[in-house]
Every structure is written in C-alpha cells, then in structure tokens.
Amino acid sequence: MYTLTYSSTRSEVWRWYWRAWAAPTGLWRLHFAAALAIALLVWLSGVSPIDESRRFFIASTIWIAAAFLAMVLWPQLRFKPAQRTLMLDSDGWETESGRSPVVVPGKTFAAWKTHRGWSFS
Image 1 (spheres, one colour):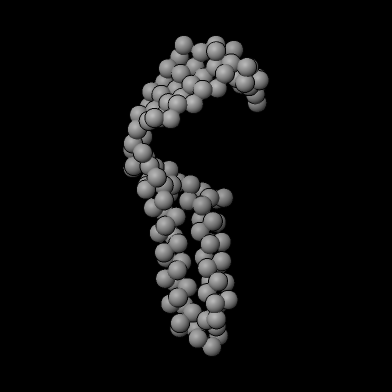
Image 2: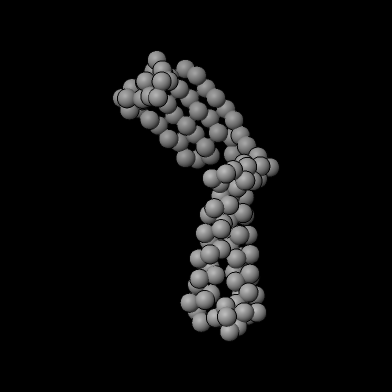
C-alpha cells in the first residue's frame, strides 16, 4: 500500500489562482467575458451607453468590479485547510479530506492501468 499525505495553504491557492488567471488561455478570458456580459446587462436594463454614458460607465464599473472580486475571493472562501490522504493498493484507491472519504474499487482502477502511456501496475 502506498500512502500520500498532504495539505495546502491559502497562499498556495492564491498563487495557483493568479497563475491560472495569467495563463494565455487562463481565467482572464472568463473575467473579460463576464465584464462584457455585465455591460450588456446594464445596457439592457435601460442605461444607454450613448445617451447616459457617465451613468452607464459608473454602473458597469461597479458591477464588473463586484463580479471580479467575487471570482477572485471564491476560491479563498471555499478553501478548507484540512490534511488530505491518498491511499493506493491493489484493491483500488481511497482518498480522505476532512469527513468525506472516497473509495474507488480495484475494478474501476483496473480500467485505468494503461491510460495515456502511464502504467499503473
């Protein structure tokens, strides 16, 4: 049996998020799409970007900032600093994080034995 015990910190989650954000196909695309959608919703709510440009800009900026802040803080708020354990043997694998264990039986694991050039025998 092989056992791996690990835990992560909020700073690791923070670094992961910003690396994922800055990647060429990263989360910045999601933020950009959300900003466009919010601007569209503000426009559809009756605030014209032509007739009321100042009001449109202020409303859009506030909503975009709130959405961006929510997307950035969500991983931090959902983070649980529990120690995690992964156990692997011939019967399958089992993982445990806090109070929610997951067991994958060996039959399911056997189907993965040679997946993408990796051998799990």
